[in-house]
Image 1 (spheres, rainbow, N blue to C red):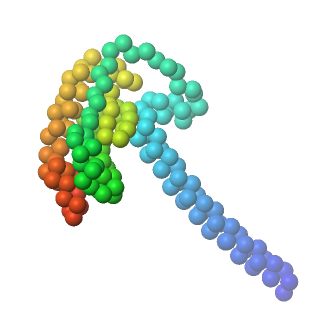
Image 2 (image 1 turned 45 degrees about the horizontal axis):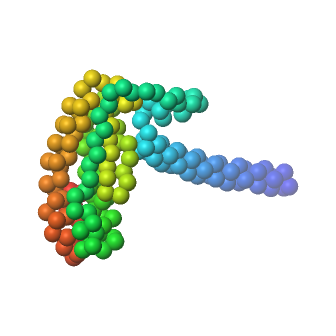
Image 3 (image 1 turned 135 degrees about the horizontal axis):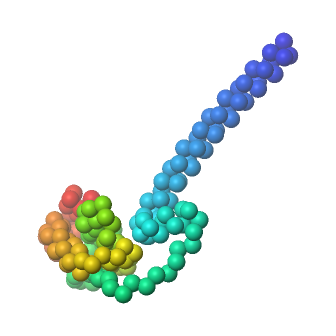
Length: 171
């Protein structure tokens, strides 16, 4: 009887341990995925790979690059007309649209990289960290694509109707 009791107890403890470990593995996997997405939103893939391998990324000099700054026009005027929530919705919609355009412009070769978003200004660079000769053309094409994409949300944005949600195409 006592051996059977301790054997069953040990088996239950093992089962519980396996359940807890599986749960912890899932949490770790989810956090790893979130960390990777966060890194990808901030750093070029080449730098991420260096960091993952344990190497310290080296500072490089790039003699020729093109930097594109995109500013949300009339932002101060708009933010005075909208609620704080709507301002966040506008910026999220605009930057989501821009992020999609940057992703689309990469076409697998990752030659255009989002550098930073501060307030109403969005910044990308072409020609770094991957050197390409057509960096100006890439940024010019991206700017044209972004100008075309803005038509999706511009009407709502300029009207600033406080009762409307942003168009679904933003999200």
